[in-house]
Length: 303
Image (cartoon, rainbow, N blue to C red):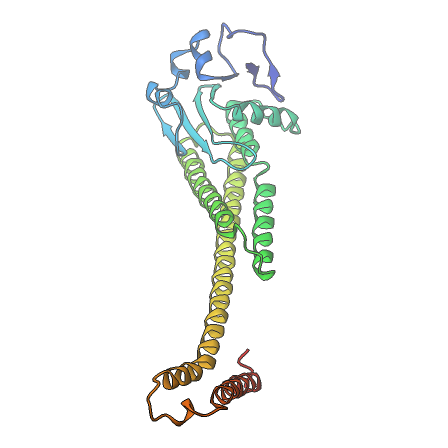
């Protein structure tokens, strides 16, 4: 898909333009060979050979700027990769998974603000890319709160797997924002002569927003660690209760084991062997010992 870069993006006629000036192209890797694309807008072959990148970076060359963006996966979508090339007044997006096309749709729905250049369009793209991230981070916070409530309710089925997946998402997004901050900072340092005053101001806003998003993910990582600690404390408490109960039961039956071992010797001169009330007496003694131990533990509030 091709667009004219004006105050508001305007779709161009089908097919590559004859003259590339203020042109935006959003193409899949397979479509690159179907159109006549200027050599300076073609991405390096090594970027396309792997199909997927795993990080965000910016490459500044003499006459063009190349960027790679890797969007982490989340429950609503898989991992997504985007390559962009900025050459003169033109931008080409190599859209592996449809994320760039979605961002362009968001840009076209934005309020016009005299974004009539490639630099303005790139700022719009960065904003569209992270437009809904704060709401997604809030959803992750809700998920952590639900796990915390599970711990408080002592209903921790599948807690470890769910918390592990959530913490992995947080780590990926924290790394994503760190890489995006590095990319935008590099753009600011290396393209100062290509950005007008409005684009420079918006670039500062994007940096502040990325820093806030990274701070939010870092805060949620700490929150998740606290909930994991609560879960571990709850597990330890439950184990202590079990061990306490086993200790009490062992203490109660230890005297009975002594009695059974003592009278199990069956020596000839043991008077209780010939006593008619010997067996009932041992039963009564055992019951008295068990009852006394239970009364003692109840009084001391050991259970």
